[in-house]
Image (cartoon, rainbow, N blue to C red; front, side, top):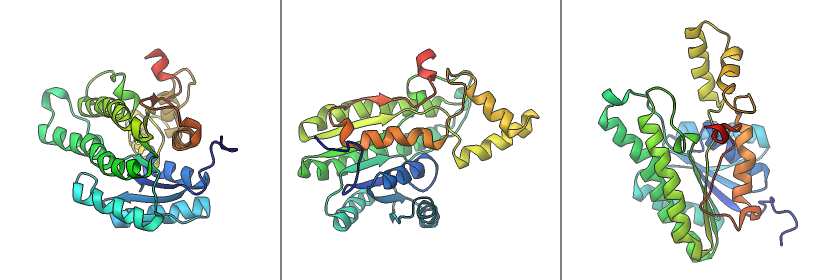
Length: 267
């Protein structure tokens, strides 16, 4: 058994959706745990910004690869690039995707299809191609970014697309765990609650202004519905991601873990 079960030294990780939000926070966390990390997303400028921010935060530089996770050719190219750079990749984090809030009665079905493609199909594509790499090496870790909204619905309208896609991610995680387990590959997911990423903080500012309260008050209100009475920070998610990437979780697969302040305990 490894002396330090959480040490990722010598491991190589690819974080798709690593240029911002929880994906970038997880990438930095994996770096701090010792891993060599490559981040990927569609826009090179965003990747360069994330690369600089991660270096400022960790003192270490990550690599990057610009590609569209919804396209199989790009996924194959990403695997080839990462394998050529590191020799062997052992960790894949799927953190890509987006949310578009619309009332279900008026939901733009083209937007719904786009969400399915970005939030679900891309996870299948990357898992398929990295899964082949992991199978050939007899070991691998796939970590999917889901949400509490894969398990419990929101009150009111607006999240039919998001909840549907995250529910699909949860079941994809379980099925891939079943299929990939014999190859020594684990597949698990993270299901966070609303989290104060830089992007969400900007949303909080807008909503706070609309509600006539301070940002601090608004953020506090967002966390009052869970047992810990706080809104999650990106750092609250990172530890669970490092656990799922490490040897500490080698006998765990097909699970969705909820760093959510306890929301799913009462939801």
